[in-house]
Amino acid sequence: MRIPFLLFSLLIFQIMTIKAQNGSINADQLKAIESSFEMNADNIALMNAISNNKISDLAVNRSVAGKTDHLFTYRVKTTGITNQKQSGRCWMFTGLNVLRPKVIDHYNLKSFEFSTNYLYFWDLFEKSNLFLQEIILSVNSPLDDKRVEYLLKNVVGDGGVWNSLANLVEKYGAVPKEIMPETYQSENTSQLNRILVEKLRQDAMYLRGKYQNKKISTLVMENEKLEMMKDVYRILALSLGVPPKDFEWRYEDKDGKISDFQKFTPKSFVKEAIPELNLQDYVLFMNDPSRPYYQLYEIDLDRNVIEGKNWLYINLPADEIKPFAIASIKANEAMYASCDVGKQLNREEGVLDPRNYDYANLFGINLSMDKKQRIQTYQSGSSHGMALVAVDLNKDEKAQYWQFENSWGSTNGHEGYLTFTDEWFNEYLFRVVVLKKFVDPKILKILDQKPILLPPWDPMFLMDE
Image (cartoon, rainbow, N blue to C red):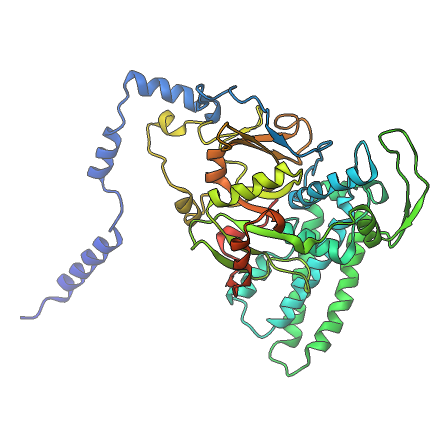
């Protein structure tokens, strides 16, 4: 028996409608959801409070508020708080904050700061060169190739990590802040970045349009790249100033004695001011429970200088990183560290504690993901670098509190510092860089492994800002 065409069409329409509505909320389901929220006195009071106030203010956990004294059994000798202003250069300030106590000690100074503007110039310069070189190497790949997409979405920016600083210092040295002070653009970087990104994207499309699928040596494209880099240099010089090739510098020590002027290059200054420095002596650790521990990993394109090193790290449980960090602090050695700083931050008190804000009980919901799940769902990841400078140990030599030296100025947090609980360390601290001499030799052997190469677009490897 043949089904009439009109009836057949109606059946097809109904089937398609049912499929289209699969998973949608129907009227009965919506009624059940709406009825689950009762307009009783408790909910009305909560609605009035939450809808008219800052949520974090209502979620403050009074059982822990004001209970942190910011006192530590061991602290690295630090002087002064730096301020990255409206820029994403936390990694640079942090790395230099690890090194500057050594300069202060070497010259017996009251205070000292490196020029972040000097290194920022070369950071953007080198990132631009790396970007254009990668565009040349991928010129025959389609625009929707994963690597090309990553490059065009992440052209250049302020972000970086410890190895970014090491790459710069090894190639360009460093200078005191007064030799190349900050400019408006170095402290307010968004417009400079936008202009530089637009220019580089234009250059990228020019190279792809001219040379894609052409049998031509990369040397020809690299010669074009050098012309493009002249524009990059011009943009940076006009915005940040011209970096010095050499300079004269003198200082006043703690006793009021003024030194003679001495002539330096940026590289000779580092060698003179920190004679013991060997940037290859540092080991980079990660606490990432979403991946196997006791493995060596390398993040592709996680660098700023073509010939520099990518982020190469050992993945360890948090409790196995802590003894190395404690030994470092006891020896007066600050460490580069990075974390998810926005999670459970009480900015006014300068305290990071997983119990600071009780959002679950405020809303009557369950918020119980662990660190691994937060990483896998993009809920948490490393976002900010700070120097790890203090630890408070109990009578059993177990850490209770730790402290960061931040780069948000002295009016943020506790006089510029952020104190965090050991529990917060477990949940939200990701990266720590430690001198090899403080690390268990058995762990150092992991460095002999062939690293597992990870892609730069992995959620765990965003640049610290």
